[in-house]
Length: 262
Image (cartoon, rainbow, N blue to C red):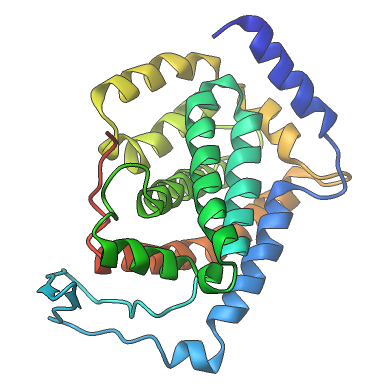
C-alpha cells in the first residue's frame, strides 16, 4: 500500500472530524427504528422458536442445532444497507488503507443487494425475501449471490461490533492498542471464514492501522468527549448484538452460516 494513499485516507477522514453527528449516533438512530419495527405485535407473533425442528426447504429436510428463528421475520432492506454503509464503510474508511480490500468487498455486497432490491422494491423490501428467492432457485451458494452478500455483510457487522466492544472497554489512554483491537476482532469474526491468502494479507496490512487516540478522534462528533462516545458505543452494541443474532438465525435456518470465501 503506497504511503500517499494512506495520507489521502487520513486527509479525507480529517475533513469529517468534528461533525455534528457521528457514525455511531447515526447507526443508533437507524437501528432503533429497525428494532421498533421488529418488535411490532405482528412481527413478534411471527417469531417461532422451536427445539429439534427440521424445516423443509425445496422439499428437503435441513437439520439445525439450537433454537430456530422463523424465516418470515422482516429485515428491512434499505435500513439494513444504510446501517452497513454507515457503520461498516465509514468506520473502515477511518481505520485507513488496512481495510481497503474489506471495504471494497463490503461495498460490492451492498451494491448486489441494492440491485436486486431496485428490481422490485415492493417484493424485496425485506432482505429475507431475497434469501428465500435464491434458496428456492438453488443459487444461494453459487457465484455472486445475494445470500453470500448477506453472509459477508453480517460478518462485517460482527467485526465492527466486536471492534467497538474492545475499544469501549479500554481506558482513555487506550490500554489496548488499535492494532491489537483490530487483529483480535478480525480473528474471531472474519478469519475463520477467510482463506489463508486473505488472512496473510490482513496480517501484513495491520501495520498501517492508526493509533487508538487518532482513530477515536475521527469518530468523535462535534463537542463530544470520549466518555460520551464510549456510552454511545455501548448503546450501539446493546442494539446491534441481538439484531445480528436474528440475522444469524436466518442464515442458520437456510444453511448459509458456514459459507467460506472462494
